[in-house]
Image (cartoon, rainbow over all chains, first blue to last red; front, side):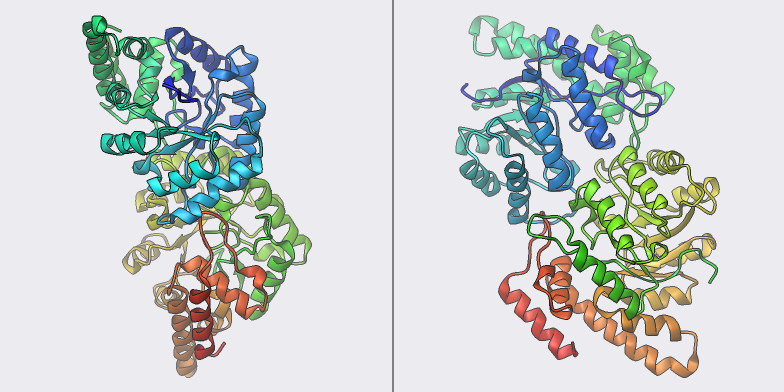
Length: 301
Length: 301
């Protein structure tokens, strides 16, 4: 495992205050807890973190705030994407200056049906505008949301032109053949699974780890899998941990995923400040929330 | 026609400088020309204007700049959308303070499959954050790009809760039955066609006009249609103007539309500074450009 960015990463959810800003105190406490529960890093402000539902300044302030709150910058992988090169470069440069371990970058997601040349220019434009050797980019392949898949020819070109800087990809497509093909073709690229059940099979193919939503709730079990998967003596323990993760992940998908994760966090962290997402997402109904909480009890909270 | 926002509006393209910023001088000249050519207003920084490919500060500076350059603020309908309430409210408040006639607002376009309640909260959140009676909102229905259609129940709720503020919709779906249904159900809503061939049929249904890309090139003909469509004595003139618009619009769709419009503007305005779009869009090939220019000559420049 020689990837620059590897391990168990949480796609951390972001609690919001009544006025729609990130709740810094609650988020900072969550980050500290995630690291204690076993996360190697925190991929804050991704899709689960509602990055694109916050303003640019709110996003930069949240990153500054958690670092000020004692969360090591070297554990942070913020999402710094916006649809424009200009704003993405600004957020990314800010993250690099903050000492973040790396950034996770979506393709520009407004126009559809765009080609590799335009996507290449977007990523190259951001990297060249940031112009900092410390920059580490994790590409973000989530075509079911962006409608913009990141193809292998594009990845090859970025790896060739920005070696050491483009160093990972989060694959949230759920397609193992795509992850396997990337592991084989791009040994220098750390492939990170976007779903908890896929980390273990991906590690067996030479993948670098994961960035997942369920680790907001069950980072402990995911870390057991990470630590033990190569040790035959721990096979039963690893299998049990994986089964536990999978059950929790299934529960996060019982209703719309992100509000469900937030409802579950309200219960596991014991704080109703977790319940509300920002528009355009909406919170679970009371009945849905109770249903999810009952199921958490059944799974052994 | 008692709509607050009505007439022929250009979805103005935005020329860019070598460093990817809006070319203010070229854009200001274009706006003045568009008004002279017959536009009632300029819907700057929309989809054709590559709004989302510019940074937030670049967008605000461009609006300030054209107003400083003598373009009447009361003719301007800037797109002020971002995926977050926070940034959309900031851009929108800036436009209102600038004296813009109104703003054009996309739904938040990152998450897919979101429901009316979340979309309502997004628009309501922006309007309440701006908190200015001068605000005039044109909703923007372009589901082929956003993947987020604006349904009639959502529109009804926004019209009821924000009467006078939500006052129009740009429908770029191309679906006349949708436009007709909106004209019937919401007489207070100015329905603006997003495509040139549809303005005339829409006007006959009680629509308010259009916001179109081809008016970057043929606002003169579109204005003839607007001025003459109710006058039986001008029927032949109107039909000829409509045919001319339609032919030009067909040409804009010969290759990817926006780079084609920019190539055509480079020719019609006699300035190669128009040629380049921002990532993720790319310019036409030389062969494509020549092909389009030859066709312009054939259509009678």
